[in-house]
Image (cartoon, rainbow, N blue to C red; front, top):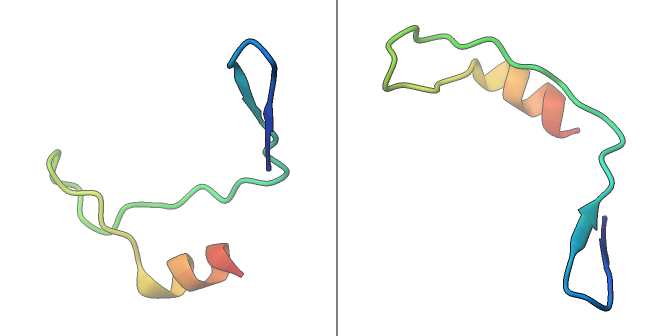
Length: 42
């Protein structure tokens, strides 16, 4: 959910977070386990 003010600023409301561990530790990769990704999106 985002709130827009008259001066153009935007405020986002974050109501939850689900940190994900990376399955590939290479510095140019950001890959997660498919099961973790599915659980976080539900």
